[in-house]
Length: 370
Ligand code: NAI
Image 1 (cartoon, protein in one colour):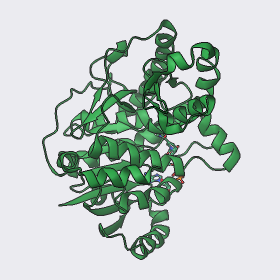
Image 2: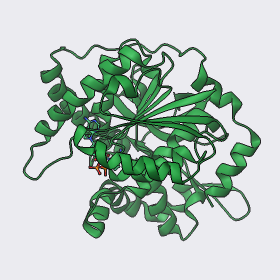
Image 3: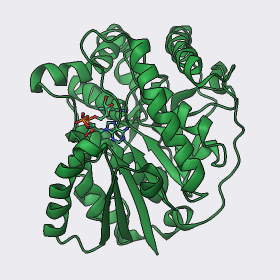
Image 4: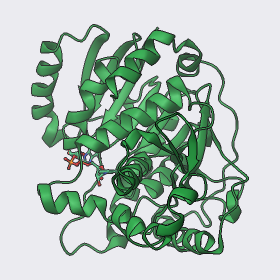
C-alpha cells in the first residue's frame, strides 16, 4: 500500500524542511510514500530542483514525486494532505484582509479536497491563520468528516515545553501535558498548570503545579507571553519565520495522530473542530485543546478542572476566533458558518496506519528524537 501525501506550499521554507521528514520514513515508517507537491505556478520551477534533490537522496520508501499547481491533481485520492501554502501577511496588511485572502485560498482547497481526495483523507493545516483556514477548508469539504481535519498548534506546545524546561533546569522532553488552548496566534493560552507534569530522574511524574507552586507569577505571566511571542522572537533573530521547528512539529503531530497515538497518560495540543462545546467553548470553531490520539483519531481530553484565570484566558482566544470566523464568513457568505457534525472515518489506508505501527517504527521514532 502506498500512502499518497499532498503538500501545498512545498517550495517554501517549511516545505523544504518538511520534505525529508515525510520522505525518509520518519512519519510513516517503512510504508511507501508518493508525494504530490502543490505550488503556485511561479514556484513550479524551483520545485523541479527540489524534486531532483529528493531523487538524489535515494529515500527507500519514496516511490514518486508529482509537481503540480492544480489542487485537483495534488489531492486526487490523497490519503494525507498538509496545507502549508498560503498568503503571508504583508507590511501594512490588516488582519481582516489577511483572513479574507486566505479564506479564498482555503475555500478552493476545501472544495478540491471534497471533489477528489480519499474519503478517509487526513488534513493538517499549517498556514496562518491556521485555525480559521482549517475551519474554511472543512466547511467546504462537506463529504469529509470534520474529525479528519486539524490545524497545527503542536509547535506552540513544544515551545511551551521548552520554556518550562529551561525554567526548571530539566530536559525539554521530561515536560509533559502542557496545553495550548485556542488560536495559533498571540491570543493563545499556553497552560502549564492544568495537567502539566515533569518526569523526574526516578521516572516519577511530578505535577507542574507543585514544581511551580512558588513561581506562579512566572507561570501566569512571562511564561504565557514568551510562548505567545516565540514566533516573533524567532523572526527577529533569524530574519525569517520558524521553519525547522515548524516542520518538525508538523511531522511529529502527524506521526502521533496517525501512526503511534499518544502514550498512556499523555496528551498533545491539536486545534480541532469543536462540535461538542468542549470546556464551554462555542461550538463551530477550530480551537486548540488537549487531545489524546488512538487508532488514527484524536479525542479531546475532557474533565480538566480549569481555574477562573484559565477560563478567562479561554474566553479571550475564543473571542478572537469568533471574529476570524465572522471575517471569513463575509467572504464565504454562509451565515452562520454551517456547524458540521462529527462522523467517524471508515478504515482505509491511513486509518490502518495506526494499527500497522510496529515496535520498530516506534524505536526509529524514539531514537531519532533524542
Ligand atoms: P513561505 O513563504 O516560505 O512558503 C509558503 C509557500 O506557499 C510559498 O512557496 C508560496 O508560493 C506557497 N503558496 C502560496 N499560496 C499558495 C497556494 N494557493 N497554493 C499552493 N502554494 C501556495 O512560508 P513558510 O515559512 O513556509 O510558512 C508557511 C505558512 O506556515 C505561513 O502561513 C506561516 O505563517 C505558517 N506557519 C505556521 C506555523 C504554525 O505553527 N501553525 C508556524 C510557522 C509558520
